[in-house]
Image (tube, rainbow, N blue to C red; front, side, top):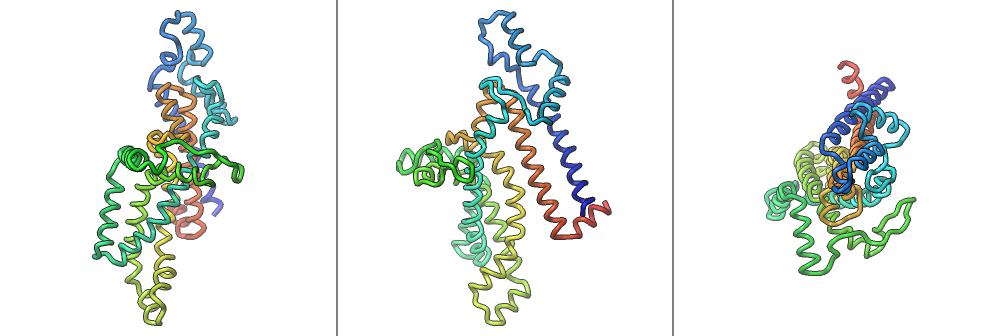
Length: 325
């Protein structure tokens, strides 16, 4: 067990290092931030002074080495635009993004599992077919277009929900959250639903497939033969077994919810990490871009590492296969 965990930890370290190379090199190639930061009428002396001040006069390998050494100390650089630590800027926006991500995950689970189970139990019914058709639309429609349509219908035409922004926040468990008030819920509803559509469709299809597989198993037939009520069969025997793949996929997909919140946050002017990264890309604020991407990479790796370790705890065959490999 310890060998398995150590091996996974070493693999995670290697992946983070490789991704840091790719991220830093990719961001270095997207443009020169001096063009965005310096007045076009500035003379060459001022331009050279700005380049030296930002450390952009050094070769890329020296810049990367400087970034790597500081990253090990917890310093991911300072923003060119805000002149503040990039990590501090991102962490200040993280509660808003996490709030939106958890809200969308809740919507996906709360509606996705019952709808998927219904479609699996009644596959030929009009409701079942409608649910599956809706899940296809959730996969297919681009989130930015859906977000704009939400704003047009609910905010402009009906005027029942705000078109964007975040409500006043209150402290909860050390974080600033907005969902504790009706105003906060009204602000988060549209972006959360927009972000949840893809995952909702995924949960519906997983729940439907799991239900159709489980419902024909022998233990379900035996439970019915014993006279167990249909409600208990569905809520206990079927639900418990279909939750395993659903929870697994959602755990792995949670990182992508945070990463792909960029579009939703931009459309709804939600002040999270995604909106910050879009603004940083527009202004070629390299330290913020690199810091954001590294945080997202780190979150993906940690989530996958935790899932691997949990699998090894729950299923010894995973460890044995790893050792044989």
